[in-house]
Length: 627
Ligand code: BES
Ligand code: ZN
Image 1 (cartoon, rainbow, N blue to C red):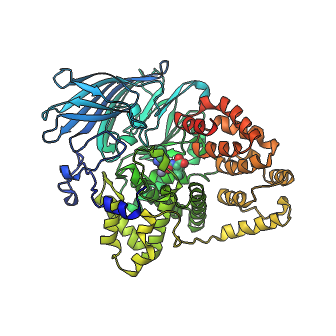
Image 2 (image 1 turned 180 degrees about the vertical axis):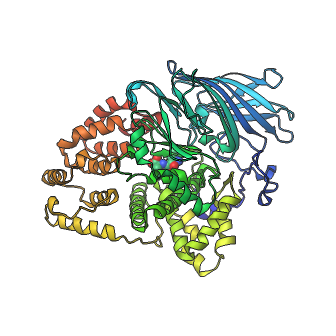
Image 3 (image 1 turned 90 degrees about the horizontal axis):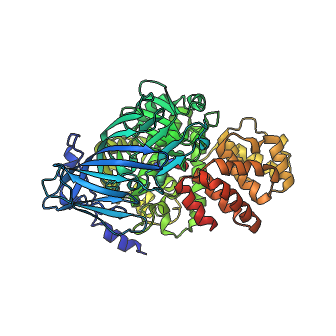
């Protein structure tokens, strides 16, 4: 393990790779950013942008549900740097059939040895005058980015469904590409799907199914490969206004229209905070329940889990989160996965600001407190000296997934909250607005941010700098003692009721009428880990947790159901685990079940049935856990 001094010393040599997108006007602050000396190696990509880069990708693929395979061509517009003799792309499990140069001559290429987590480098010989090459390829049956669903696994039960999940390093399992967040390209695509199905991408999208199953896409803004996305299935589109709307299966669309009605207001609020929305359209698509995440910020089209369709709009901060990524993440992107907090921490801060603008401070304070609790729990799990509790991660040679914890999200958010509290919101907002403008369509390292923080926000030896001690937050472990303390009168009330319950007041006598989802979550989280069966029964009879339609409430409730062995709720727990593939929910529940021998038996039985419904990403995590 590197100690902090060695780490800082080695960091001082790093500079970010700035690739100038071909179709954007140059910015003085970025002049010369294409120079070879700007190169920084991304430990999770074989790509060498100092030698050659892909500027545009043109996909021409067929989606075959029977073979569970994508096949076709990826044509790359490339830019060869001086004296470069080849270009290297990332692939994982791809069958590369041939590579052709512009003049239809076959190119010489080789697939290197498989490297754990990373896949195989595809090295294609070129000359400095090569501008274009076409790769003929198909995907493998176990491509981790792809989930092929049978009709039974969808809400409508009539048509199959396919969706991709490229973050963090899975784009390479469905497209040969330079799969690094530090490299951007524009793309276009021709996608043939079975007649009657609809296809959408992280691009300009159709709003109606085509006659023949052929779809054309264009993405004029440059994006990193992890934002490449495709969904194919039976869905319809409902517009909210000129630039926002939602796609969902016909049987889900009405629920979705109700749940996301505030979408236009969210985009307006976000723009008011940090500048114009840069991507034209902002739509959501509600995926089937096996989607392994809550949401994924695919540009122009956020992918969302149906588990946020609570029926009362109580879980829409997830939408604010994915929308916020349109600035932090998609517009200004973490240079490598070691800088993941630059995506997620900034996004949680921005998400909270959007929610505060729409629903007020009380709502926002509760959200912040729940976030701090998540952080404490994660740090306790990882150990408070673990390097995975640093904001700047050290994921070289490891699966980037290992670093994708609440630390990036909540410790990141809390650093920004501390800066806000110390220097004032206005000053931070001015900085953030100009930060997004200055770095738009580029990637950024933690160190670049740190240097701008020092030159533009806080003088190095000032009292404010000492108060914050930013290095401790970024390069140090655990939760620094100067984390902002958030007060919430709503939660104070919840805590009073929890105390009353602990002192013997019957659940039906508690004052819970005004509780919203956050208060219920706080309530359930504050109860002891070992509730008696009698207490469980009384709680359930008074508040009907087992029947809750809110996935977040169900999730905390099940965490009491398991240790108390409250069998009444087992069918509900089983059905939740069989239907929902959201890893944030299922992993902790299996983990908790696996703590006792009987629980582990039960977990294995449920998993046998549930596994086919899970995404390869979730399967990977649970396989590991129950082996
Ligand atoms: N970009 C993430 C999802 C992600 C992270 C996918 C890392 C793969 C690797 C997305 O923006 C996200 O953070 N989703 C959260 C919801 C959010 C409200 C915290 C999730 O899926 O739970
Ligand atoms: Zn996120």
